[in-house]
Length: 198
Image (tube, rainbow, N blue to C red; front, side, top):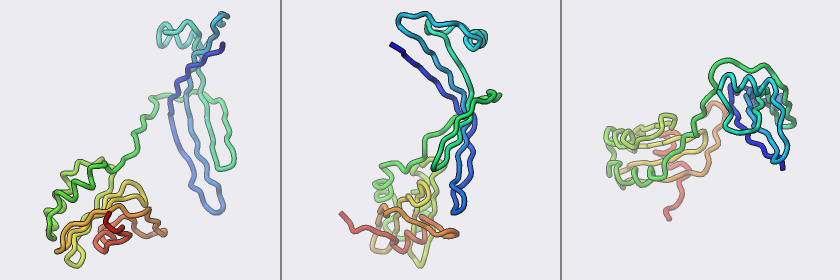
């Protein structure tokens, strides 16, 4: 029975944006290493295997290692794969997407000032220990403190502090027109897309 074990390193990710006249395209350059073998048949030792052993030492598997690099072009309607020369340098390391932590809702309800106080509100948000990629916007609008935490465009957590107390809510996904802000402190201060309390 054929078995396959593969490792893939990504060296670059580029692309063009989708528009009304262009579908847009993502271009990836990868290095793939495969360990292939069968339970009953010996596998030939090829140049790639010898090169791998010279660089990495003996393979932990009795099966030979094959290695190649590819450029993958992906659009809405098609995918093209071409073998290319392997790039030099180290592969890219990708961080997991930044997310607003689940405890942020309760933290804001508990630690925001009970009446409008801009400095205290900013201090509470600063102590929330957010990923540095999460957008933070805190401002006072007409005597109301608005707080907006933006996970990514259109996905955010709002809070506001009024004389009546503290409110925290997750608005439905916000769609902003080109040039408009999204997930702003002003929107939070005005109670934008506020959901009724549960």
